[in-house]
Amino acid sequence: MNNSQYKIAILGAGNVGYQLAWHLHNSGNQIVQIFSRRLPAAKWLGNLMDIPTANDFSEITTDADIYLLTVNDDSVEEVASKLHLGDKVVAHTSGSVSMDALKNVSTNYGIFYPLQTLSRNVSVDFAVIPFCVNGSTPFALETLKNLASTLTNKIVEVDDEKRFAIHVAAVFANNFTNHLFSVSQMILEKSGLSFEILKPLINETVRKVQNHDPLNVQTGPASRHDDHTIEKHLEYLKKDGRFAEIYKLLSNEIRQYAKEPV
Amino acid sequence: MNNSQYKIAILGAGNVGYQLAWHLHNSGNQIVQIFSRRLPAAKWLGNLMDIPTANDFSEITTDADIYLLTVNDDSVEEVASKLHLGDKVVAHTSGSVSMDALKNVSTNYGIFYPLQTLSRNVSVDFAVIPFCVNGSTPFALETLKNLASTLTNKIVEVDDEKRFAIHVAAVFANNFTNHLFSVSQMILEKSGLSFEILKPLINETVRKVQNHDPLNVQTGPASRHDDHTIEKHLEYLKKDGRFAEIYKLLSNEIRQYAKEPV
Image (spheres, one colour):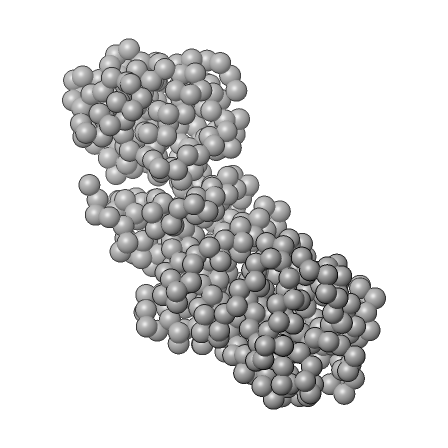
């Protein structure tokens, strides 16, 4: 970690804004303003951290070194169209939005994308999070790298195309797997069982892929071409057609990659 | 752990047979025979552990206290139809096959189902694995519980219906999530990126559900009803239609459970 101390304005008070404000503050930076188009969100976070807040674009501070746009991917362009920050460093934190969405905001713009699932109610160790950065100028890039280095030593400089691929892959690796955990919990609870019983299996699922390609450690009925078991599972899931549809699609996919049965 | 030492015959030399032979041996039990209908599989495991092997049903030892049938779910009934073990304790290790599949094998039959993903090439800590047990008689049940207690202290007595629900849930929580990790790796590698970059995210995905219901920590474009990002992701995945199909189905599912956008 490096000791650069930056003055930072956070624009957007959702999960990402909250977590970045908190961790950048704790790593020695100064959060000078929380801006949100929704005043209650800005106030909530501002009060929590004792930071001035704003909800009107005209009130955005001119006193920050770096402006981090943490609004939803969908809103980056709209918010950017209302920002004029001269040559201040401004970056957005989205995985899917082009860096050039900020090209009319400042000459020094870039990317500050934390590759992590961030929730307001779950604390997270930022030191292990890869930060994907990019910059329109060497100054913007260096500044954002320096800022990232106050949080982590996993700094990855990637262009729009690679960042987009990472974002799509992350949806599969996190969002979709988390939903499958939800489904497994619902299946268990219908039979009066607790999700607790699956946790060793879930932990092992992830431990296995630390040192093995997931394709090489695939197990289960589909990878064994065990059609009889698959049929019985589908019969059981029929009462909830949506779970059956997921089951069918993913089992078919696994079969495509599995060796022929012996 | 308990010190009962049983003489055990393992019938089936696949991943489960391999791991059970190894761990039951290490926990103080004696493996007296490895049987497989495929002689090379039996020999491979027998030689590795210096245990007598057999591949003909007439050669199955009469000297064991417990017979563990570790063949594929699909093969349990067929193999069981050829076994006649009097009143010896016999159990199968399948999540999906009825206990009564063994009712003509012995008077003392039951279930010895390790709730874990087992591969030959990945070592695993059996002490954290829940074992689902059941028995046709108090003697069979107690014997199988005692055997499980040499490996783990997580012993769960469940009937066929509950075990089946656990097995289906485990397919979602392990088999399907592992396949999604494979997909994410393929997406990254197409862009020249390493799967390594996703590991902190994957670890956090699982850490989050240790103390939170997965439904409550769902993040990502679908849970935010961020249709624009979903469209861009689908456009990107079009070149591999199968990934797009998974993306579409799971995003729709997540939306069903997500709060309306604010």
